[in-house]
Length: 113
Image (tube, rainbow, N blue to C red):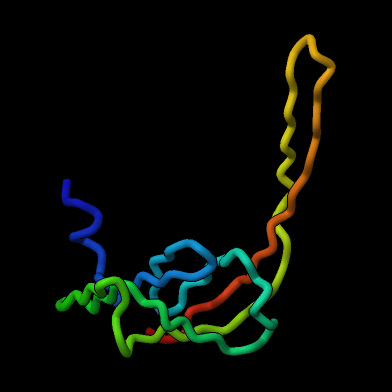
């Protein structure tokens, strides 16, 4: 059986860093980015922290960033994820704490690499 990666048509992609994380993106992808404070719904956004680009025949790797490489996208929506409940408990000592957290995110559709 052939490897899935070799049978697929290779699409150009890039690796970007934003919100403290790294994302592998291609044109047309929709990603959820944490720390959505700086984004506004419906606005265009550019990511200049590009770590790697690949167009199928040539791969460029930054050290640590590529100069002049830009990934463009559009903010589709802003929201908050489902609540994560954190419980701390120590047996036999009457100690327990319960906290909840909802992470903010922005959904971004990548338009151009």
